[in-house]
Image (cartoon, rainbow, N blue to C red; front, top):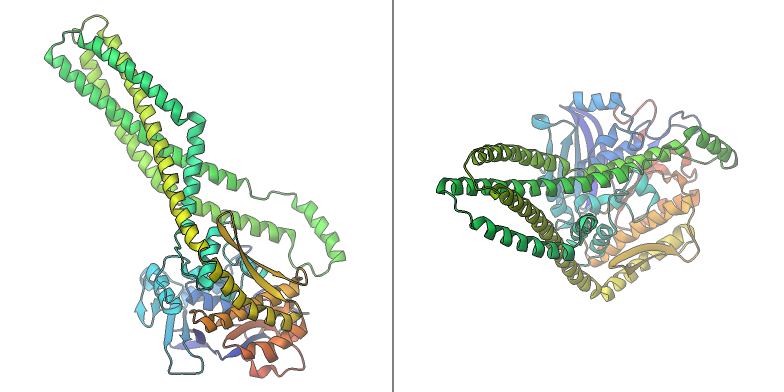
Length: 563
C-alpha cells in the first residue's frame, strides 16, 4: 500500500490537502535553522508524520503532547477537539494506477458518540479498526505480531525508532520473543506466533514457584500431610467413642461444614493476595528503577561536555525523563490485573465474614449443650488439624498446578522452537536475499556494507545488524535505517510479502549532504516506494531542484493547522 492523500478539515472547511507521489516526498520547513528558538515541531512538519500514524491506529496524543516530556500544547489540543477536526488518509494499492484498490481512513480526536473512526465509510470499534487495517494491508488475521508492531519501522517519528534500526517497538516492555515473532513475520517465515504469550506465562509461574519455595517445598508438604492425616484418624476414633445425642451430632456436622468453607475461602484469599503481592513486588522493582540523580551536578557536567562537543542534542534531563517514561509504561502494563484481583479479594473477605458469624452462632449453641468431659478438647484439636490439612492441601495444589503448568508450557515451547529451528535454512536463505539489497544500498549511500544476521540464542532467534567497516556514527545510523527500510521494500516485493510501500523518516538533517543527494537523485527512484521526509530548507543540497520532490511547504507564518 502507498500513500495517496492526507486531508485535514472541519465541516466543509479544508485546512490542508496533501497529495503524495512515488519516490521522495518532502515536507519543507522554510524557517532558518539559525533563527529558530524552539526545537522540534514548531511549524508542524513532523506532525504530518504523526497524523498519518494516527490514521494507522496511532493513539494521536503525540500530535499535541510531547512524547518525551509530556508537555501539552493546549492551543493545538483545543483546536483539534473544539473544531472537531477530521483527518482523512487515503491509501492506494498501486500509486501509478489511480483505479487500483483504495483504503480511505477517517478519524477525529473526540470520544464516545462524537468519535469518528471509519475505514471505507464503515464505523469501527477500536479492536475492529485494528483488525481491519491488518487484514487489508498485511493480508493476515493472526493475533501476533500486532498491527502497531508491523507498521512500526515504517513510521520513524519518535526517539526509539530514530536511534534503533530494527528494535523499533516500545522499550522496556517488549520481549526478545516478541521481536522474534515480528522479524520472522517480516521475512515471511510462517511459524506459531503464540510463543511470546507462553514465555510471559512461564515467567509468572516461575515467580510463583519462587514464592512458594520460601514457605515450603512439595516433599515437605506431602510428609506433613501424612502425619496430619494420621492424627485426624486417631482423634476421630476417640471422638466416635463418645455417645452423643442426635441434635448435637447435627449441629457439630453443620459446624464442621462451616469450618471447611472458612478454610476454603481463606485459602482463596491467600492465593489471590499472593498473586497481588507478586504483581506489587514487580511494580516496586520497576519503581526502584526510576532515576533520581543530582540533576544540577549533571547539568554542570553536561555544560562542560558541551564546550568540547557542541553538537550534543539532548540534555541529561531529557534522557532522565525518557527513561522514567519507559518505566511508567511497563508499570502500567503489569498493573492491569490489580483492579480485578482487589475486587475478588473484597468479595471473598465479605464471604469469610459471613461464615465467621455463622461459625460463632453454631459454636455458641454447642457450648451450651451437655457434653462429655474432654469432648470439646478433642473437637478443637480435630478442627486445628483439619485447618492445617486444608492449608497444606492448598499449598500442594498450588505446587502441583504450577509444576504442571510449567511442564505444559515448556513442552509447547519446545515444540514451537523445534518448528522454528527446522526452518533455519529458510531463515538464513531469506536473510541472504535481503542482504543482497541491504548491503548494496548501504554501500552506495554511505560507503558502509551493512548486513543482517539471525542466530538462535537461548531458544530465541536474535536478529542483529552489523557492518564490515565498524560501528556507524549518528549520521551513518540514519543512513543505515534508510538503507534497511528501502532494502526491505525491495525484498518484500521480490517475495510478494504484503508491506507498506512508504517510509516516514524524521530528523534526516543528521545525514550528510552527500547521502541526502544520493537518496534524492538515485536510490529512492530505483525502488517502488515513497520516502517521506520532513526537513529544513537550509539543510537541503542547494544544487538540486527541490520543487519536484516537495509536497508541502510550511513556515512560521504558515503552520500546518494554520493557527
